[in-house]
Length: 411
Image (cartoon, rainbow, N blue to C red; front, top):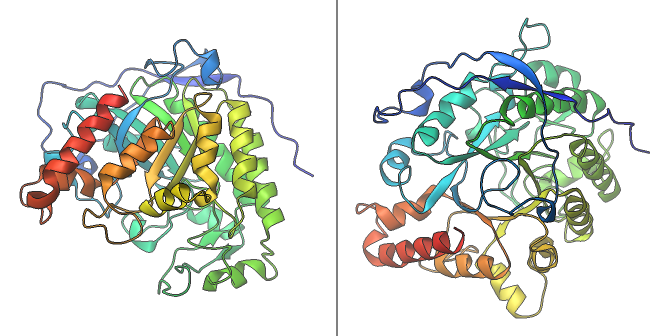
């Protein structure tokens, strides 16, 4: 039986307009921006999350609509090359904006702090994009997927939360290779973890719901801002699956289903004029949870997303088979009722190698399935724009044309 949830949030915090000199050129990494002080006042929220049909008009921009376009994925992670992003992506007209990862531990000063949440990190990372007139989507991560994603070697999960929560330390690819020093991953359905995690989500929504430059929120049901317990966990061939499924963790498809739907129940209590995106994933080879979550998300007016855009998805669909998490058919089912988002499973490969493949057919396939939002890796624009990229000479023109075509279609 699900826990009884709190009543909808009645009030939100309004922060005064940031004082920035918009005429100055951007010349430094976002991590070097000074903290931005905020003053808060309480106002009532003007509008809850509603289906597209209740918005007028859908995707028109501003409060009550969802952004459309091409977005750079996770621009602020340590794995990203900011100097090249600044030069070749930030001001590209095909770029609608970016996704900023909000690592929980960077904003949470602890339950004993006089002011528990400090959002200066988020404002610092967003500021160059704000100055460039771009949209910023906020992805709150409770847990890193890989050690290399942690900020300055610090766990994305706050230390005080890890002390209260049962954890698992295992990150492996399906069928083999495991990380030698994986992040500590909390048991997501643990009551203490959920208590603290839901509190920071409410605080983030209160802080950013009225920001005109914010596009959508995406909150992790599991690792990152996605809806699985770990990389490949739930597949029989993943070495971590047995660890998760044995006592005292006892992960199962039923446990994950109940956790996922319980979390969506919680999200449905949050009032915000911004879109909340919910990602769908398989459990093992089963699409059942993905289908149930998509139906729930559409009912509540959430956006639906997947990180499974690959050339393999195109091949399967063309053979009459299901894409990963059945997203190809689900998107057609829920378009145009709610915003639809896809992310490539990894950066594309113009030379047809790997499971992702070249970008142009991926963009065309997504558009044909009603996709409104593409979350793309930095490499896509580097191939298109950077003359020194090793693939630019051969593939730069086709990538440039594909990005321009998709951006125009999503205006």
